[in-house]
Image 1: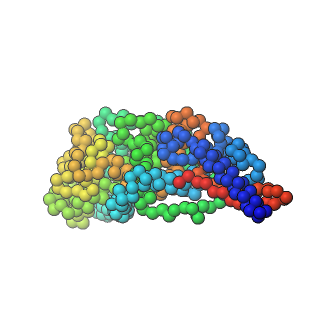
Image 2: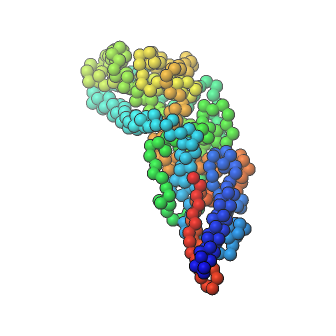
Image 3: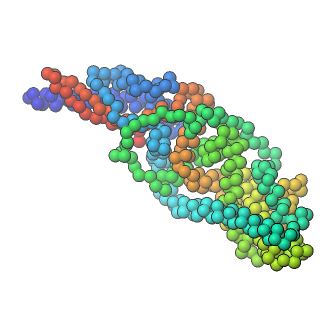
Length: 430
């Protein structure tokens, strides 16, 4: 009977702690859930300052104050590369859409990675080709004429502000900025302690795709018509991490420039008519040099310049809200060689054409965000959430690194006649 009585007392004590813990976590940050579908407990309790005693006071309020508590491990939204935030996002997206809705896209991830690798390779090849041509000209003490020279003209275009070349006419760029010093990714953060490897799920390509889709649903971008956050181009910030909309948009445009250059350059190398046109122009430019190697290098330089011009057209298409095909064909190629020398001038009126089965700006953002380091993306996303919660939704005290996602405590309960009972209690948002 005594043993049964003690066991019953243990059960009551444990039930009191479980109830108190659940009540504490039921005080989740309501606005964070409503706006971003994320559960988290504001451990500062609207003060902006974290203290462990805040949690013990709430446990006491909910009936677990007669026991001694010790924090075994605690995790905030920003800990371990924002793993808790990412886990909740993946769970939310799976429940909303189901896993099957995204399995078809897992195959795209390898294509995106290959395209990124090829983009870097081809950009290096372009620089090497330019250096090779300059070396041949220097060795022969010759130079190409400046007029009607696509190579020289595109070289000058590359020195121009990129946004002026690719933005739609009359488009006004947001001039919003944030103070870099207060952004989550750049300031000192509060940290939890202890690992939760025993309750964490493994992450793979599917969870990364789900995270990217969550960002596209909850954050604004350049092509959106409505912007209400501290920055208008939130997804561009998540990618680039600059403190102004203009800088973030420029960083995205330059990355898209590299990605779109690849299919354009690949196609132009297969089109015999375009290659012949480039060779004819190169022969005209090099007519006074009489060095075949220079003519061949100039023809290749013209093809590279032409591909760059076509890439500008692609970006105009994307930033206008239209679609660009993943790979080019004769039908989808937009820029004629004669039009290359008009880019950026008053005669340049084209804003790009829409291709029905192509990808739009949103799809390309999905691609570059997927290829970005996930921890970096998650931390910047939480930074945007933090700033919007403070300045747009009135939660001036809100800090993502003070938001508890899960914790485990060790409790010591004192029963009758000096008997003590120790046990652990875990709770975490799923």
